Amino acid sequence: MFSNITDTKISKKIVEIVSGNKNLSIGGGSFCVIAGPCSIENELQFSSTANFVTKNGAQLLRGGVWKPRTSHKSFQGLGSVALELVKKITTETNQGIVSEVMDPRDIEELYPYVSLFQVGSRNMHNYSLLKELAQQDKPVLLKRGFASFVDEWIKSAEYIEQGGKASVILCERGIRTFETVTRNTLDLNSVAFIKHKTHYPIIVDPSHGVGVSLLVPDLALAAAALGADGIMVEVHPNPKEALSDGPQALTFPQFEILMTKINRIIEIVGQK
Ligand code: PEP
Ligand code: MN
Image 1 (tube, protein in one colour):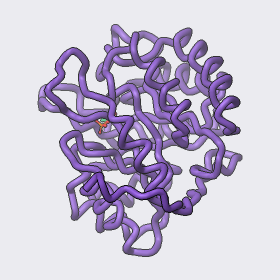
Image 2 (cartoon, rainbow, N blue to C red):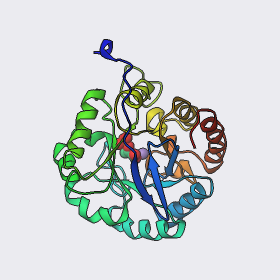
Image 3 (cartoon, rainbow, N blue to C red):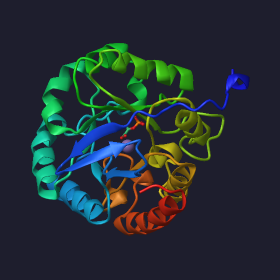
Image 4 (cartoon, rainbow, N blue to C red):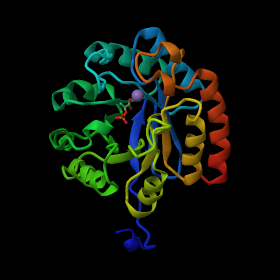
């Protein structure tokens, strides 16, 4: 019950991630920008995006290999074929990557390529997947189910942590509400709650949260101002041609402008 929210301070757990030649401490007062395409589509698309976001300050790449699409007729991701591209481009850019694992059978295959496993919104309640991830030692970015209570989200995080091996970073990515003017409703209340009342670092995904590229930068800045531990944004060299989530992908110039503004905000809120 909300009336039980007290002002007792909870100490945060810092999650260490190896991203190329850097060690990132998520939740320790430095703001982390994760950027890249929704899906890895081909070498040119992934390489140009990865290089651009790296040059403009992203500390970790994103890129879907297996994609959870509402229709089976939509692009499902390149699958295992993308893994060679992941290796090549992460080496070239000296970056790590976060990528979604949907099937417990793919954990082992994906493990060597990622710095951080992503559990997508649709799989937040996939307890078999969560239990399997609890058996390995790489950190997990657990997205909020789009129709889940914060309490259920935290309980899913506990499934992963109970193995004592994997740490969890939460990712707010918007929830389904009565509002239809945007794709989802980015719940910044949950971000403030997670920040004050749990030990988890919290990353905000404004791309899925709002679903419209024009509006993504404003929500990203709001997340930074709120004191989130970072953001994850989708970027594409040519959003109109994207095979998934084009309407919410930032163009390169949009990403560059966002990064300039983010740097000013995080300075004001005292993050690095
Ligand atoms: C994604 O990050 O590309 C994705 C599919 O996100 P979500 O699970 O939040 O829909
Ligand atoms: Mn996407």
